[in-house]
Amino acid sequence: MEKSFVNQFNEKLSSLTQIEEKIARFMLEDPENSVKMSVQALAAKCGVVPSTVIKMCKKLGFNGFSELKLTLASEMNLAMARNVNLDDVHEAFGDYSGFVVELIGAELNHLDKSELERASTFVSNARYVDIYSFGFDSIEALDLYHKLVLIGKRVQHIENGYMQMISASRLEGEDVVIAISSTGTSKDLLDAVRHAKRFGATIISIAPESSLLSGEADVVLNTYFEKLILRDGGIATRIVQSFVVDELFMRILEKDEKSKHYYEKFKEVLDLKRR
Image: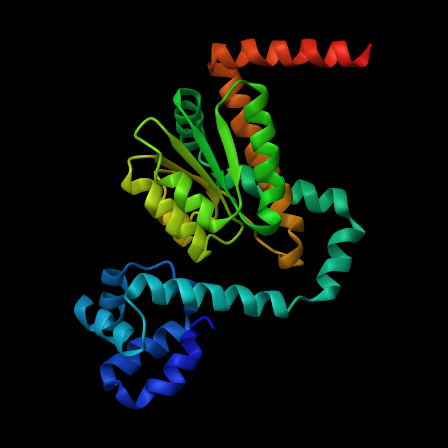
């Protein structure tokens, strides 16, 4: 059974000092901002030294601050998923085209074009590309996989956490990992990305820029959602992820002559099959 920050706090409250309890309560009362903070930032906010934060984490049964933040972020996502307001769903789908326009407009304002350019350069020059994802995020991950295959890239899409780790251990400095996640909190995904970094691979995240996953990335393609509906169903996330994937693909096509060549060959195959 996975750890719960709330449960650990309730069970081990008596072992905490007043200062440690203050830190834990701050995180519980403001989890959204807490998961975005570094240990130094949280310590400064609570008026303590970083080592006190680490000690509090370990007393609650966590290996360190990163594991505690990951657990708290997961609990936040679960709570939001359980509190879906169906009125919001009906309202959004009463004007679906407007909903999509609003989503893409917000994403355009939050997607860093220089990061998009860097991502396309890394993918264009990569020896191998690994795409890691889980669940509904794999819809757009598979789309990106197909697009990169069409332009001649040596690419694989891996959903299994164990296989992600194995593949990551074979990567080198000329290789790229693209990790796609609507929340950026999956422990298995984080483990695989960190493992790939150990071997020198460049990490590109397609995830919220404030997420733990993007914190591990060399290049962050921010997916921005002002309002999420049916979080488990990947409605808003899928639309924004698809937009980012298409933007990345078009940038690669624009700058990579080999990619253009392979894409022309793909069109020849299409023409042949349509006869």
